[in-house]
Length: 271
Ligand SMILES: [Mn+2]
Image 1 (cartoon, rainbow, N blue to C red):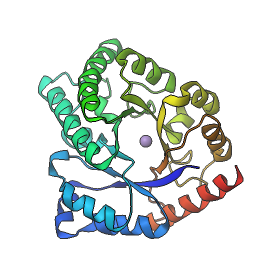
Image 2: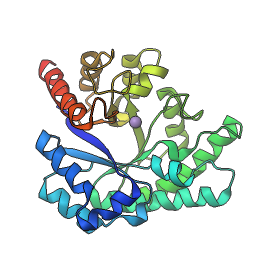
Image 3: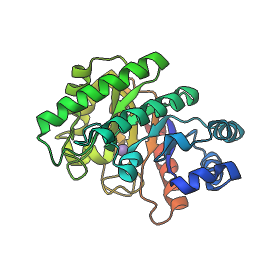
């Protein structure tokens, strides 16, 4: 019904060490052993990825990469599509170009999360115009490489720019590219959407990727979200891609990862 993946957040130093068979390989091996079909990769610098080595490890463990997360580029380097510093804005567009190049090789989506910026210092209207321009530029590159970008609504404590699905849909229509779709995240939706199920239906076929975490960002099943109801709506609207767990490693990474796959499989079997 849905495929399952785990977001693997890899710090730059660690990620660089994959050439030396560092910890990324351990993460990939563990995801495979637990039964995941994919790993969503998160790293700050797309220029420092040894793609051939990465592809070899992925092939060894028969794992797909549903998406590349780009938020660490913002958190580490402040690269943002709405920065007042034009050099940071340019850098964000260039970085997304590089992510898109990698995504084409991995058959992955590219996530537009925090790399859009937070709009703390500029009026939201101006930030939205800058974002529209930046996304149009990135979409031209994505179109030429057959890659899809996914815009993720984030809750108000992380950004002022696009918190709800309705706002993301508006931006998708403004940019007007077949290569820009939506990523919805159950943790953010729990904070921002009036009724999660209705919002999912309003986005319908534009949903290209889903992040799952419970109401408290713990593994699904460890909070109070109604995953049975959420997943049955996703099934109804014809969603068939990944549920990618983006969760806190609590009580520890292995327990959280194992609890996620067991819980989601049980729910999927009941739909
Ligand atoms: Mn997310």
